[in-house]
Length: 405
Image (cartoon, rainbow, N blue to C red; front, side, top):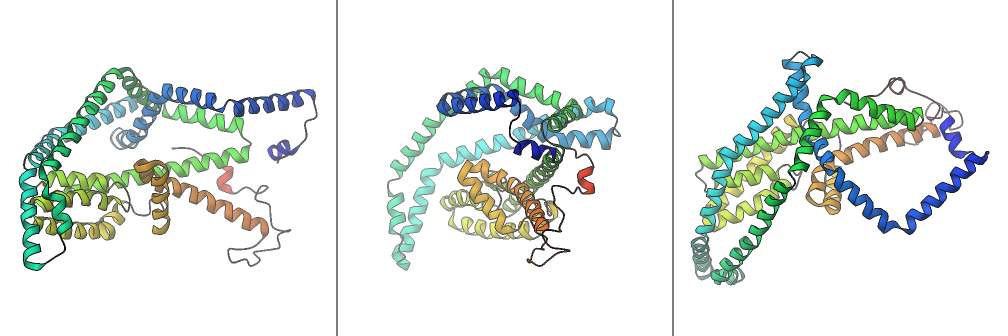
């Protein structure tokens, strides 16, 4: 009650009036120079971006570090450095192994596809002519699209030529930003090694700047968000890896072309909920359609079967109830997140919305308790005047200090 009373009381002393006056002047100056303020904030964010990258690396590697420390090293705090070292070595080994096994095959498949593209286009044209002449199917628009294969090849060459300077420039920027990369990696190591101390400092700041009740709520929300994001991303990465390997195995067994290239498309796109399978399958289907329409048909059936297995068997076992929201709200989170932030928004939209959904549920429950009614509007243990104010009561969970794992 003290914090709420302080926010509602009028200034009494000269010091309080001066603080209010300076706060009003500062707010006016910020609004009148909003462009300059936003520009300065952008420059500050660019300066701090290596630390944001380090926080992301630490967040991704933290489950691996915890697993090594508590399952292999018996939870000894003095051996945490060994768990961090093992985690980095494992991550580097996985990336190197993936690059050694996959990248050469991907490059080989891409070169083969690019080299044989005129032959694929000609074969597709012959198939369309056959369908048009013998079955009178309305495929003239597709014939017109593929008639000028030279123009199509020139367009592909132009796209590839324009992409090369961008790739070289990106590699040059990565080399020139070696200091930023080193800072990100070094900061992630420090964050992982001093995780408990860092989290304790953050909790101390929250308790120092917020009223006790608000501080407990903020920490509980952070704990809930961490659980949602960790469970969702770990489960989704495992699920996507299983789908990619399964697609490659079945395509190799059926002797479909470009099995590795297509499997990487399908596996990576599967990280995006709901729409990911279609995003990965459509370009893959187009590639196989140019090679052999029969292969494209077999692949379409294969994708449907794999996605049914994923939806009904693999994903429920791996993900479980990691986000705890209905499919309707999952679709809503993906559409809104994609519309606001593109593909990253589609990926993080589901766990973020799940966190907001949980917070909204708590707020609705508190409002119902304040009014003394249940979810159906019926009286629940007393009238609104007699019902306890959620601002006054504390549950056992709120009395215990919350932690952010």
